[in-house]
Length: 441
Image 1: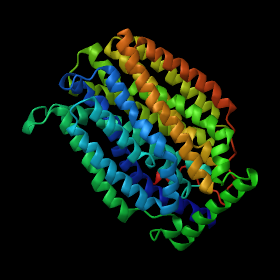
Image 2: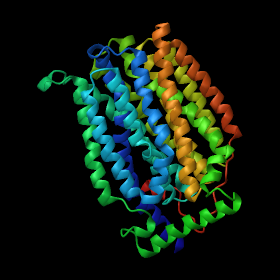
Image 3: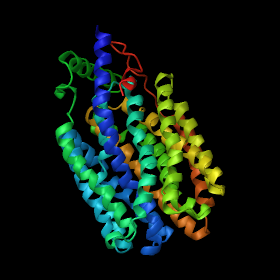
Image 4: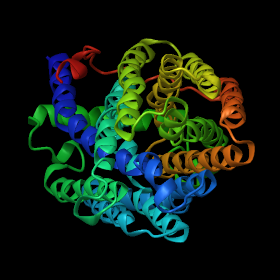
């Protein structure tokens, strides 16, 4: 009987939460990376060099770094529903406002403020999922949610390329249409979030009473076991001082340095080497991320069942390194597609498995602080990677050197994974079928 209650509760939570969180993160990620497609016209319209673009694309992460931890602590204090809604409304307005920039200074300022506004969004959702899904189910839930990253590229490539083709309509440049049309949906979704999200299982009227009791009990039991196994894991100060948290932050820094250092320049690199139109570049860029979406789900299922997740993270980092170095030197359309696909599979596939590590030993207020700190440190890589790639491309005249360096960095990251602590998942009081949550989608 309890097994059936657990299966129903997890299936309902997955159906209710994951598609919605997936959707809003697609919009969030698209607003973050659509600048890579805008650069196809910003280069000519506003005279942006790769250095200006790389710094502007990456400076988003500096705002994220400064406000990441406070924003996540505010979410833990004021609740996910209100805080996530506020973040979305503000970032939607700011993203759409990018259409008004006239030079590098305005570009830098808006990207910084956009990063500050969005700072608590991703770590906030990671924290929110720990309130609903037991640790043994979390990698799969994270993977279902984080496929939004690759889907943002799959859908965003053709959409962004198509919006750029509106160049001159109603007197607006194509890149202005891009920022306007991709920024405003976040405002509407933010308002809807206020009505849709529940703070936790105890508030979910769409669950039966016994299902609410199951989820509340499982999460509480896991937190107690985490506290017993790692005293202080739930305290803010201990989480921020934890060597494991800083090590995971360093690994995440490497993953995002390479990820953004490559992906922000994919449209420009592809157009330079193929001569494709803006729309064709967007369509081609969608292919690798479609492949990565499938890979993320397959890897997450296997990692959840494996005795250790570390080989999956390290192996995927090495796949990402191989794809990145091949992208550096590929010239043909076919080889570029294969290389970028390998990079996307490795870099994106590693992320949901990676995030299962800190959520397995952090709890309570310590989870809010520790998760945010890891995200903040990682997003320093979101600044360093694009800035390094842009400056290096301008100084060397090509992407070969910076992408080779980023590939080497991923090899280092793969080695560091084995120094990370891995906590085994607490044994369930019931045994829901592993595929129940995913089968409900």
